[in-house]
Image 1: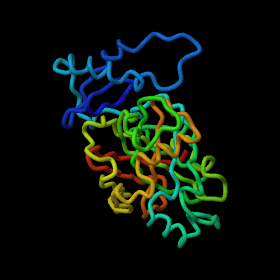
Image 2 (image 1 turned 45 degrees about the vertical axis):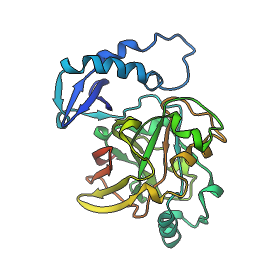
Image 3 (image 1 turned 60 degrees about the horizontal axis):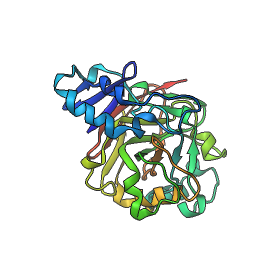
Image 4 (image 1 turned 30 degrees about the horizontal axis):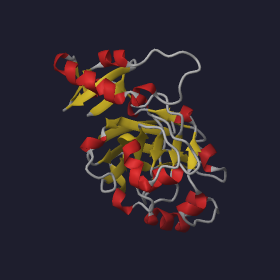
Length: 285
């Protein structure tokens, strides 16, 4: 299934070029009292929600995708985790372009570790990116995002995909500079997730997906997740040596070569095989 959140927090099922309004399926989410459990409750109860969706989708109201505002398919992640320098060609371009790294030595992902982005930076494709510090270079970074469905820590690579609820396109927007990544990459709207969540049964192999991004029709990045230094399973394993992950947590698995700047007025078009395509507008904050 392809599941989205749209307009005024409606739940949608993607069917062709339409969104079916299946908000009624949220009735199976549990009633909660404070202190609330960690994690996104839609993702934590996704199997139950999908079971209801199967029963009601034939009678659901359909609206063209082009007529709705797509929000992040995950509303309440505990953690947004990034994987730095996780494509060899991106390592090479970073070594060649100090505008990317600001004199920071480039080595390998196992030397740098993963990094956290503020969950307040999360938006959907329809909300767009609001650039801050426009006097600095602000880059696009297209990435495969894995969405955690089951909590865990010290997860092995062999078992990692059992913890995945689905996949989406991620944009790890980045202000270049000497500050730590978690600071430069956490401005409001600098984590774009969308256009929807695709359940794992529709992704034959997350480590063999074409991904690309263009800006105003000019292609910038074009690669395949088979070029990841740490593949999806290894990213999850590596992350959980330090962090417990919870339902709805987002692991952005790294970006390939071709990162570049965007300006207010640009439109980014990101696409990942078997997931879909999203247009993301850029504006000034």
